[in-house]
Length: 181
Image 1 (cartoon, rainbow, N blue to C red):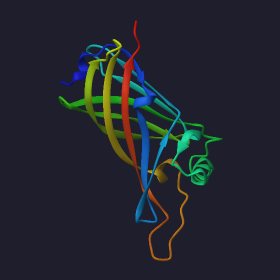
Image 2: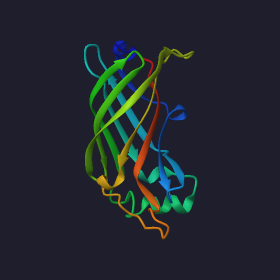
Image 3: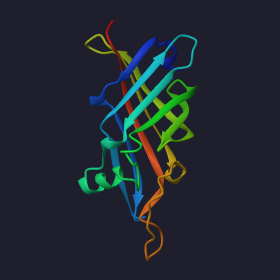
Image 4: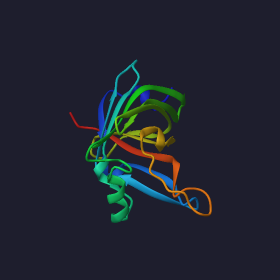
């Protein structure tokens, strides 16, 4: 049983208090972190039914804090955002682990390649805020191999290893809000 089981209705992400990001090893010694600034999250909760969540990310909104790198990430070497403008995630199952944790399984689509992924999500809390809006906090992560989604650009280094790791850590922090009736 988790706090999510008592929720009813449609919630969406509060962008001021949510983040969809990633980190990836660069030159095998450091990490590059980034996020997407334009996305939508819709979560439908109903009694006696598993939550259904849809996430749509605009690939063009990638932001690593470096304009030249962001431009490269938008090109065909990586996201190919002109041809593949959206990254999508749709749940297939939500399984309670304990009071504070759920396993969220779904289909992740990048560059029109869809693969199953599972995120371990911590339920940060469920409450009614000072404005009378119901809120849910969720935080989790998972790792994917970017090459499995057709994102395979790389270069070998003379000292061994590659410029960009195949493993990418996805980081999700969501504040979901149910609009007032």
